[in-house]
Length: 276
Image 1 (cartoon, one colour):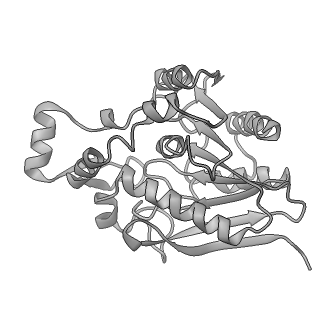
Image 2 (tube, helix red, strand yellow):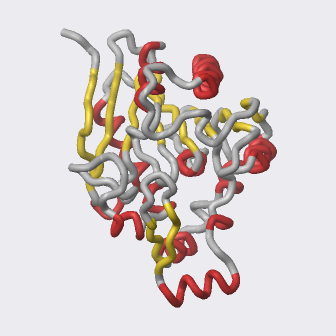
């Protein structure tokens, strides 16, 4: 009997019991190391070239799991893009952290051959991954274009007062042309859990080998945030020359090959994980 595990669009229960989708791909020649991948803001598990990234690591013997954050705006029936703006409007860093705990538990119950779990997070997902810097269930952490600070993603001063008064503010999704709603409860949840969500504190007390990769042409998460993470973790920041925020990937990605910058990122990551 084959020991390969291949699951697409399985359902898990995330934050507040909201159901979402995940994928699992464990090769027959499994090296025992499973990667849990966390997407970024206005992202999802099937965005861009993430399926090709999954294939890259599986072809090198790793298991790979990726999932949609429960309140990312997708649904069970529509896993791509954002048909559930009500859920998106109340998504929060705390909810995404709870989602990650749920998926880690699911992996432990589902993948019997798993010896270690390593996290790879992109952008906001990297911020969530770094919150696990003392999680006994996690072996190592990889940050791709990761954020260093959640608090500064919120408005301040008069803009924060306006948000509270109006309850909702909007960000334009330049690709889908949707006005993406963000309710004030997002800030309230952050404020309630801000110690748990303190990336600096987690990094300074980290017990996990951590790899940091950032593009020096990133206009979404400036490379200065990568340098901050490197300082707090006392580790090297790996720089992708001319690398943008998504390392040349975009949605949709119709090419059958991983973009060159993303391939560099995968190769650096593979070398790091193989040394763990």
